[in-house]
Image (cartoon, rainbow, N blue to C red):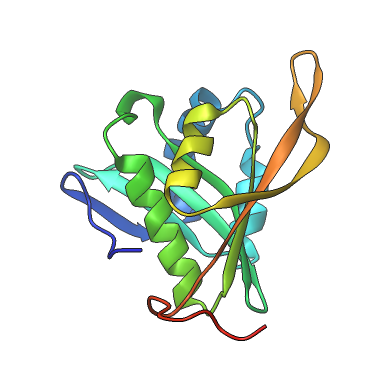
Length: 165
């Protein structure tokens, strides 16, 4: 993966509880079944790595990871619907993967709704592969929706030869 670069002048910084008033409207617009404020508070107080994406000093996106041992899990990543389709989601997602690597993760996991085709396409294009499904994982209007489980191995440098099995 190449270095993280932004399509526009934006800033990344640590997400803070003070951001939640600006974050919650983005979360509510972004998801049919959004996280609650309490979930974000719990993640931040537990010390989960989280990023805020700002454009012109205004919060336009965020992402939250959990990291344990050498594995990271993307828990939430969202870019405001008003600023989508400009490469900001890819920029934020790459920054989350880099953050996972910087924290010593060797692999990154995530779940995504199969119906969220833009996100699935983004994750595939960034090197993630589907490794399974979680049946009935997400709430949906007509019951429950499966989750695609996706993962990517993080490697230090380009692999010149396959390692022995």
